[in-house]
Image 1 (spheres, rainbow over the protein chains, first blue to last red):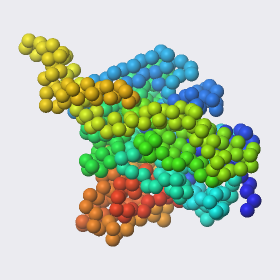
Image 2: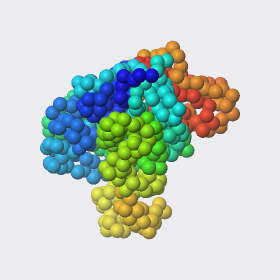
Image 3: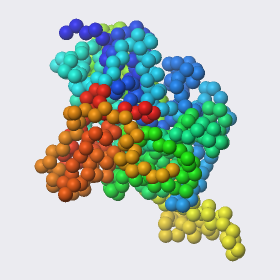
Image 4: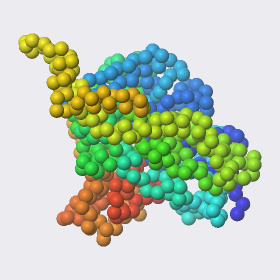
Length: 429
Length: 92
């Protein structure tokens, strides 16, 4: 079979677009296939776009890309049932180019990215679901979609967390409930001025708030609130195993989160315009599939390349970096005229040299640390009730902080365990 | 903000519903299941218990894939809807 395409990229998210764009720019014949009505139609984010990798593809992209706000305020909020305590980091350093992170809405962002692929000479087709891989013995030589067989020298599977293609190729099995987190999100419309006043923002600066505690009823996960230009992204992310074990529904957690006294005030007067859900591959190296085989490379969420440490949730940046690395590998393979797995092993070498595998290796114990249930229940409750005691003036003689702390911790957690968790957190994260 | 029911939330989204269902339930396996995790994990509440039996609507599916992973009995056969069908996020 004579192939028209050097490469077929499956999935027009950040990984697929970055791969297709890099290949098209280098003059290779590339086809980008997307199952949604348009690129981004099936995608949502509960995270932040960090800039450095995208900036290598599109220098000063913030002048051109459809971003929402750059993040100048980063907040961590502990929630108990009725109270909250926040650590609020406000940096002028994050408020000027090249910035640090951005809030985005994926339906806009991914569509922009896919247009860039077309402008660079790539072919983008939407509304096509890829059903299978095309094989020549043990070598992937194209895709099967809607009954059509489309041949190519190599396929890059950037088909997301549920990657059917990685499964079909035997590179991984079914995902496990302890390895994935389920995110649900509402986009809540609010006037621009209201957002800027309420969150103390100027111009296009924005805030990212991560919540811990009551938002997940104390189970493994957290909540988030991001400011967009004229809306808020509000959601919860919970480990799938924790939902199953505790018979919890994300949608009910989200409603409870919205009704929390602190959160209620932040979203007041807003109107929900969209409700979405997605899985996050959150177990890092533990769940990473084999990254390549003859004629096939796996990138982005499909390869579980997400850094979820509790400190950061970084997926888009990893997706971009892996897409570019996959494209560089394909460029090299084309020069050699060989797309076998030995040549494609260059992909893993590139990832190992970059932050992608170095971060995943460096933080590989994070998923173990994040299994400590006290992070989601005992500690958020503790800091809130302690703060309440510290700030409360009730006419009785006051106690010192240490004494209050001992009282609050009694029966909940020992000093010894608190110190141990603290050291373990500091070391792991 | 007033609370939103799941029906209210899903009504906000844009769907192109395919005639061909992308979820299939193997009843003989499903029948004997005790935990019935699908009832909890589906963020669109596609799975409901009716007269002691699990039934489902695929129309409101948000295409996250949780049900298939959570069902350790393997009773749920879930795939993406055909190209162009299913949910389309306008914000995401």
